[in-house]
Image (tube, rainbow, N blue to C red):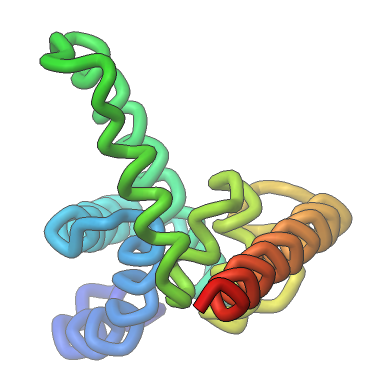
Length: 178
């Protein structure tokens, strides 16, 4: 990162190649569209490039990257909400987001399981379990305390246990019906 800050193109390329898959997963898990995830990854690297001078050498770099990615995601969400507020609904009885959520719950994928969590809890679980960051690194990336991260993780794990239990009950009921 120090070489990237100094303008070394090779270091920048190596850093992008090394960190992009992790950041891309961070966005893919949260958005159904890979195209959105690709756009957000590109926006993240543009912002990283613009603010690379603010990175303090000696500090862990991954929490710094995830902090920027988090704000890119928040900005994207705000933009989507603003534009959706201006759109007219064609059919208010049809709720595609509810259908998509129920379809996702039918699959046993990680994305579907994490979909039951609020954004803040999903973000903490992804960073801790999917990306392998430490509690301190997640706290830095989310601008919160270690205690807050632990609390969000605990509540998320409980919701995930409940969701998995619900899926298991549904499967056993289906098995009894046949």
